[in-house]
Image (cartoon, rainbow, N blue to C red):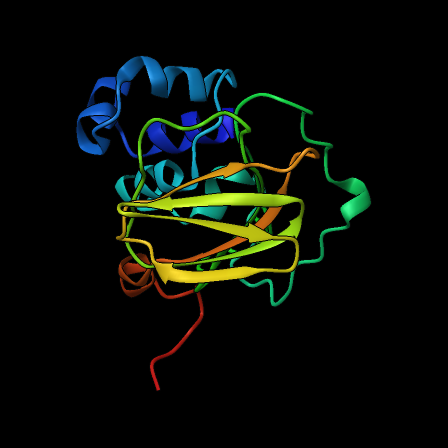
Length: 191
């Protein structure tokens, strides 16, 4: 994401200071993302994409294709997430821009996250491996392998791996606001 974020920010004519001000993030954190030293959460990636008026896929792919009808990604080609450390977010279908949904493979951190996150839209979580704890104000849910959760992503939430083997989840985010503001693909006509 590093080089792509920098190029999209520059294309938008924004300095790091201006992007920090518009996203509510710190300049130092954005700089770490641009240098590949930090990976943003889904909520942060959506916030950055919204300010840059870009699809999240554009931030993760150097070759998004507005005309692509499908995207195939082989599990064997995906990088193995680290065994420990912070959450790891791997976006899927990055070749397609203007998707109604933003899918990710997430390896949640095993350490408790201090802050809840929230963002526009809906979120779907499916536990592919292991077990996770989903915390929302006043409630802590345990989801085991094969379990799923669908919720309004405006609800403050946080996720962590609680199984001996670090969990892997599929998260699909649907941001209604971003979809409503998405530009029409080139060559499309109103019906």
